[in-house]
Image (tube, rainbow, N blue to C red; front, side):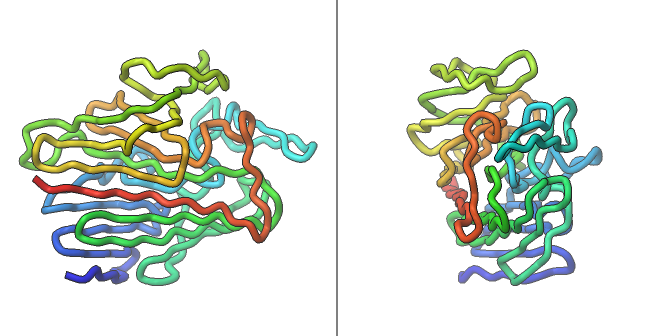
Amino acid sequence: MDPTGVTVGKTLVLEAADARLVVRPEEGGRLGSVVVGGRELLVTSDPQGLIHWGCYPMAPWAGRIRRGRFAFEGREHQLPLGMPPHAIHGVVYDRPWTVRSADTIDIELDERWPFRGRVEQRFALDEDGLTVTIRLDAREPMPATVGWHPWFRRRLAEVSAPASLDFDAAEMLVRDAEGMPTGERVTPPAGPWDDAFTGVRRPPALEWGSALRLELESTCPWWVVYTHPVDAICVEPQSGPPDAVNLAPEVVLPGGPLVHEMHWRWTRG
C-alpha cells in the first residue's frame, strides 16, 4: 500500500499498510499518535498540559537552559522559565503550527526568543517506519539546537511484557544539584536515567516482548534518556546537549539552516 497523507480538520494523517501517523499542528506540531499493527506507541494525552505526551519538536533549544540565561555576541539574555528555575524545550512545542502541505508544517519563532527565524517539519511514513525532518532557518545569527521529545508507552495493548530499552553510549554528562550538566563527561552508569549521552554505539531500541521492536536513529549526535516515569520512556535525539547555549553553542547563520532527521524503524512480531 502506498503511503498517503491527508489533512483532516486541524491534523495531518499519514497511512501506509497498518501504520498510521497523526500530526497535531495545533498542539505544538507534535506527533500525536503513531499506531503500528493496531497498537499505539505514544502517550497520547495529558490533562495537565503539553509537556508529557506525544513526540514534540524542540527548537531553538532542546532540553533546559540554566535559569534561562545566556550570553551571545556580548549581550546577556533572559528567557522565560518554562519549568522553574530553568527555561525548557524551546518556543515551538506549545504553540500552533501552520500547515503548508499534507506532509509539511512550519512556525515562526516568537518573542520569547531574542532572535528571528522559522522552523519547519516534514514527515514521511512507510509500512516499516517514519522519518521526520526539522529545519531551522535563521534570519539573524543565533545559537541554536533542535531535537524531539517522544513519550513512548511502557505497555502496548495486548502485550504482556513492558518495554525494554537497549541503549549503549560512550559518554554521559554529569549533572549538578540543579539537575543541569556541568560539562564533565563520564562512562554511563546503570540507569535509571534522566541524562544526556553522546557517542551512541548502536541505534537505541525499544522492545515490547516479541510483539514489536522499534529502532531509533538520528543525525543528531546527542540523546537524552528519561526512564523514571512508570508509564513512559523518553529517548530524545538532540543536536546539542541541554544548556548548549552555555556549554557548546552552535551558531546558525542566515542562509545556513540547521537541519536534522529522526528515523523510527519497526519490526513486527
